[in-house]
Length: 186
Ligand code: AR6
Image (cartoon, rainbow, N blue to C red):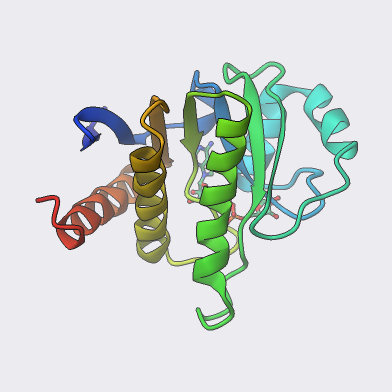
């Protein structure tokens, strides 16, 4: 499997990988959920299927989640110990605050992971399926937010951006190159 590794402060802590998020053995995987937190299609459906019905039962106790915010549950039958549920913006052309809301999903998910003492996290490409956010634009936001977090948090071990298929992987690798170039990191 092809992997692009980004060094942040001398350690390889941001990784873009191709794969199925539900197979990631990390402290937390992030779910691209909807405001009800009661399941759906796409990666949300896959996570609930793999975690088992206990996940839905815990989600029912949370009372939903607004766009850009994040909530944490256990991972149940997943290899990941926790699931961080966040709600990405629906793409409405880009003039309705979509970029800021998507950035907030990454920031709030990472902040919640840190708050709970977690050290490794894996994200899907939030909002780029059913919600229609252009993946190249979403990938640049994801890379930027994750790099900024890792720079601020030297104790956090690893952030993985898990791409579903080769096309998604290529888009994320390009975003990594672009963000590095723009930040003067070479
Ligand atoms: N592993 C990694 N990535 C995946 C997987 C997987 N197993 N399955 C899909 N993807 P989406 P959204 C990718 O639609 O756009 C749900 O119904 C997929 O290719 O899952 O945020 C929720 O309940 C895409 O790039 O999430 C909401 O109603 C990315 O994950 C709504 O969909 C996100 O696609 C949220 O829409």
